[in-house]
Image (cartoon, rainbow, N blue to C red; front, side, top):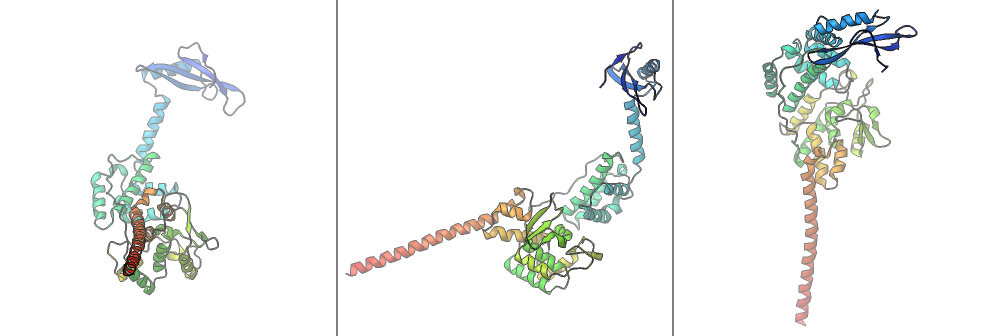
Length: 388
């Protein structure tokens, strides 16, 4: 910052600066004043651009002290307040449209469905400042009657995210209360008995849906998430190197998991849809957004429990089978499941421990059996010796 230069007027000084839109330099005048016990420094104006002089700057200083003129900071605050007041007329739907312009496609399809199905009807035409806690409570309780706590939480988080975006961009006022989220128990680990798994495989084989059964088998073979299957394209499968590339997965950067023989054979025989890059496309060859009806029908035909989730549950089955085999350590399982942290994989630790205990018991059984055979041989030897 350039040097201060005093003037003949108290509290008025200037600095030299380059002219705007012309060659050379000009004086930029500032005023220093005290108000309500605090010292303030304010830019008064430029010598040529604003036709500012020391005398005019001194007059401005006096008006600031007397409260007849607002400081630049106060002017900006007033303009921001007016902008927010005007923006407060925007509805939640308006904010959602603006929000989408500032976001990548990642996760947008799922969020759009949540908005259309649950938020638009209840809050779409309402300005955030007019939303009251009772409105949100009613939606939460209504959804909890039919939807899981996790689904309800995702819906309410999207509503909160949209409004927070509006506040951050000075498009609206925020809520004057905190949205209460339902408690979600993510520790649930689903599994199938050997008989249930056989029934499921038979139901898949009999089912005629083009993609439902194949998606369920892919989950059993690879542990891929539902959303990852929806986004899976043929170009993401590296048949030569034997890997599946997971693009934009849940949890961050791209990942890849092994393409085992079972998954390879399934994909080799799976029909390709013309004009679609997706392996399991939706309507019109676009990215699929739902498969619930078809996979639930297979679940029903297999006689699986009502609370078993056809795709996410099979991801747990995949993990449980590997953990209980005793041949896969938790670090390897974490990588196969593309979990961000080992804590997420710990739910399968008891299965791994059980397998290790069984292995340990096997070792003990072998030793005991060997000892028993040895004792038997000793008895026979002693018996023969006594006969002699």
